[in-house]
Length: 430
Image (cartoon, rainbow, N blue to C red; front, side):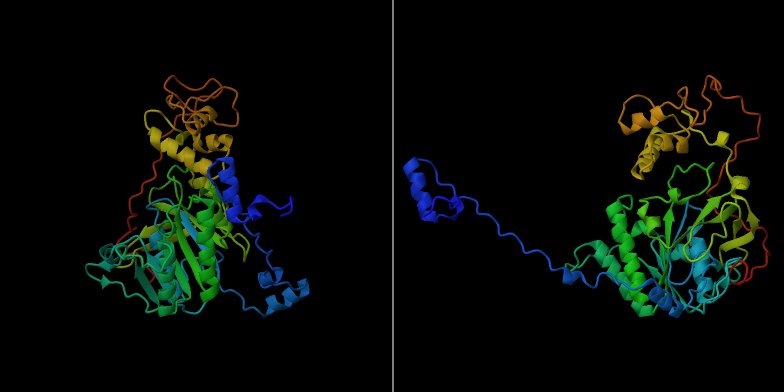
């Protein structure tokens, strides 16, 4: 045997004899694993479609124009996200939108120029009794939904079959089956946290959005997904893409997004704002929000629309949205800081968002055991100063006297009056 042969290539009985001669235990040498062959690039030849710019223009001209489902906010073939705070009326608005699309009717000022479509509303939230109570009246009876509107109730007691790798795969297969069964062209999911619990993770959010986009492509769907805002959102700041709870990838991969905000001027008044759009210009931004109010004059709980306004007129004054030791729970504040940190915000941005000092944010993130303080550190002009028990900060002029603080209620909105007229073209089905 030549001297340049590696030890791992000697026969095993030779290695055993060598070990006995040396008086040491025999330990088989680890053999080198065969290196895998390099992948063939032709296997990935269909991953991308490449055409000239002019060819893409020709193909685009042949594509049918996407019709509006919710005005400029949601078009056919889009994956749209509707997000808002808890009890802001996301589910109520989603059912109203779905019922109007099933009837090819407008939703208030938002036009629907598509033909009647089959809508599958996947409800992870309400029980049968809760859904019935929302759309029933003691005298008028239950609301007569369109035959194109289907509601799917989630059955959590169902066990995952062994041939599925995970519950997420099982859930996705269940959605696909029902989409094909009712031949739905519009899918509404209430809400996204029930599809995957940990949407704060970028990897989980990416898989979720890829699955939804695959559903959209395979079944030629228009998808509306409901989501939440963080619990400690700053009500003094305009709604933005940063206010969607979870990973930023959720909204990055969406085609469009809209949000429901609560007005600081009236606890029963809300507004709709266009957050993201690809197929059109922004029509309902911060200078042209749509005011709405939840009403139920009959057997259909829905939003009544009351014109337009600027978002700034319905935000809380900054002085009313500050954290105080006597009213804020430390755990809630720490949770809000950690949520914003998980979204990638810097310490400075978190402090500005929550109206607290940067040292407070730093202490929470570093797991400091010291008490959380809300007193502003000096020389921090980028973070508005707040009042403490001793009085105003030295660099902050005293605020003028104001009325009682504005509190946003999460209670259901009451109807304006019992006989309020309701029509499909304005506020919902009759």
